Length: 489
Image 1 (cartoon, rainbow, N blue to C red):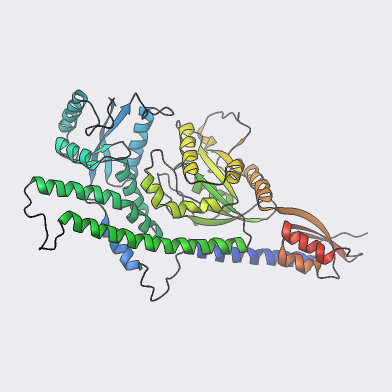
Image 2: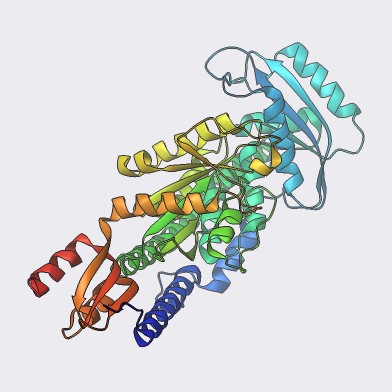
């Protein structure tokens, strides 16, 4: 009995696989590139209008010139606002990292100061606030203070600026400015413009309050019956509605792309994690996509991008690169990027990448889990999520102690084959696909049917008997149709 691979079939398998990958690449290009909008769609914002909105709307002060920054971290030692999973020193280190991410920004000095009254206008008690004010005023060369809290109220911001004589930024405004600097696509720019609306509203209240205090004259404009504040608020509301309308159209387009992706039966793996944990580097290592250029900075990725890779069985999967998470990421930012993060819900598998070399890795994991919980990710995805310990190359004599996690170095390519096998196993379970060896009669349409309805991995031909053993990846539904059509053959 002679058993050999049929060269023509082998060539056909290769050609079909190459064609499948080419189609995958074409499909991914459609996912990653913005499509032309329908002409005459008056409800949608065009490219020029988005760019004008994006460039003009940025809150004044934060993008003007170089910033030499004094960082203040309020260390809450008591009460519900006390941080239990981290330390003040590590939170200060992250604040420094945020500032250093920005071009033309540098940290001149920093201080950690205890407070019992973080909810007060001036955050600190009278004695500590006076000492802090003296230190800020005596520090030469600074033109901004970064108070490392999630949000400052308009009243707090105004009082701190009056006391210190420089611009004051909170975590929301700094992170949003980093997003603004990294925005590339129309959707990212719209999402950032939407997230800036609350910041613009608070700045507007500050400016109007200052205007009133300085005796700004009549509160009503040109006899219209509207105050300056009311006019500005109305304009902001109109702008917000226009942005939301445009984002909703992009959301519908994203839904259409997801439907196409499902129709083509490409399993989807969302790669997520804390910002700068190595997600993009990992996807580049798994796919060999030379177009990916990982950067060692916070929030290098703002837009969802999709990249094709192959698993050990040669099954093609789509890896989705997502925006990084951050501790104390304001809810308005999460809400603004909800359309982007919504993609996570429709994945077949989640891969959570952790920078295991980071001193805050446990706290970072907790923050990622909180964001996923707020996004209402289905339990089936959370329970099957693969946890990856990345950057083991940065740890001397790394000892693997937790059997549920996979240790890797995306940079050096260590542990990637084990990760691919784990991904394949979970994908097969979650999608209902099967990897089978099927005996086919070459005198029937069985083989051509399998090429059309499943993914043919390998063909071994028995020329004497006119049959072949075909290795396929096939869905439960397709396998049911196969048995119904070819039973007994």
